[in-house]
Length: 111
Length: 114
Image 1 (cartoon, each protein chain N blue to C red):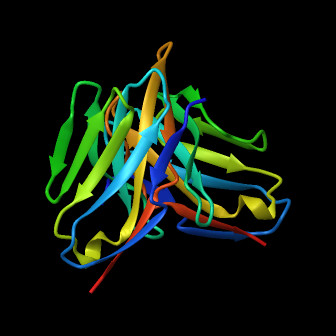
Image 2 (image 1 turned 180 degrees about the vertical axis):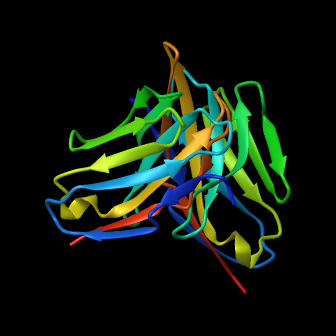
């Protein structure tokens, strides 16, 4: 158990819909990262937050957005969902410049 | 362009055998290199992390090497076990203007057979 929690574990929705994925980092970690992993694909870095502020941006679509709240939990919002958005979405947390610890992931299925 | 390439793409070995996975990168500037193990459908778990000045780092039966001159890293697994069956991911981080970038390789899928 990495100490990072993600909810929900599974999510099934339809094209065009909007969903929110939630991540709670390890106690004391200020950085939160979001990743997308499509079937049989590598991990794609989406975005990083540090203490509530956006720190780094990767290959995140404009239809996707994220935020980190004062209690340090983070949410990833995915809108206008397409079939190709079906993937595992991982959250990771770390102390500044330290090892990232990954959560168990949320499996999103878009029908 | 910052890239991380891993080879082989997949590998099948018999239990008890050793194997070596490769990671070549073109990331600049280099900050550190991590190897992760990812079981199917689960989050990656860190095995080793190496900075520019480190050549070798071990974690049990896993030994990672780094050659910063040739920009190559390897992960050696000794006396493989069935539980080693997983994807192994090489990640290189780069620090520019106070911002980190994380470049992931596509991984090597290892299957250990009894």
